[in-house]
Image 1: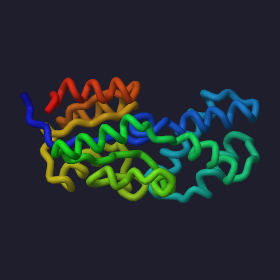
Image 2: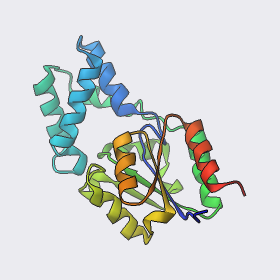
Image 3: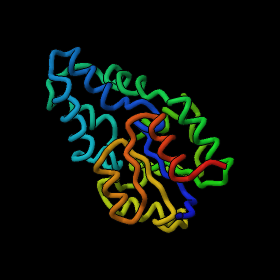
Length: 202
């Protein structure tokens, strides 16, 4: 049995409800567009346009989003749809506290933007983590394997003693490809149950 030391968590869809997807889908639906296509386009722009890795700012992101969709809502209305939907799951916050008490290193590894800092100001979850790695500040996203290896290096952690939880299958597979144990998350209960199966109970 592996003696795991480090647990890495995605944010949206794992620690909190997935506000980016549901927010963009709501925007599309309200504007008479296909919700799934609005999300697909918004996600494409956030990565291909560089917002996810801090290459452009939020103003540039929304300008491109409006140009590509024809939506005319102002930044304030668009961002409210997204940020208000990123609500942390209480059971996950409790789970983080328990993992820390048990001696595990707990870190966030998220493809987020400046929104993550604002969400922490609302919900105060950063103190639950030993480190927070945000693609917007780090300059790489989880689409780049080097993000995972650099996180491990900064934590002084070997891949075989780390577990990574994400709701995106591609991110989970990329983590596994560098030797990290990857868990695909479908719900907080499932995530915590799978972790308990791997780590065991005290």
